[in-house]
Amino acid sequence: MIRSASPEHARRSPVSQRHRRAAVGLLLLAATGLLTGLRQAPPPALEPGRIAPVSLATAVPVNLDIPAIDLTGPVIEIGLDPDGTVELPPANEITGWYRYGPAPGEPGAAVILGHVDSYTGPAVFFRLSALRPGDQIHVTRADGSVAHFLVHNVSSYPKSEFPTREIYESKGFSALHLVTCGGEFDTTARSYLSNVVVYSALIGMTPPR
Image (cartoon, rainbow, N blue to C red; front, side, top):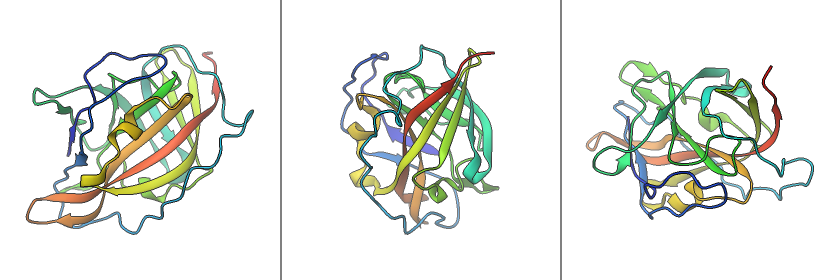
């Protein structure tokens, strides 16, 4: 289950956003740590003509497809709980788009969160850490368009060092960040000690049919 300190509660801005600094942690009910030893590498320079400099019009995401890890499944909207933390996706097999940020394909950094596992077994982002630079992510949107993203970095952060501003603030282009939990599992606190973040950038779109 995901518990995370929230970015600033503000509606989407097409250019930039400011969010509170807070450690975003993912809390899962599981018996073992499943995501360890991630390599960290700086993102490559965005190549003109390779990473799309333009963005799509507003449309909420409805499905996420990541061929490299055989993942396809629905995306729902999530917001904030009363205590200001990011709301949890209600089930292990679905992901949640943070609706107070941009939608995938809009200017700025869209964020989708998902569980890695639970008592019942692997969840939707169980293999997220296996992604590598060059893998693609496809997001189907409510208007029938599909936004295509290219992974450029996969990183792991201790909860206390989670880069909230880096994850949620605008990058000057259309970015998509996928977030789950990772690292060792603290059986006393019943929580993973780290977060896994996949960074990707928009490379193109398929228009509605």
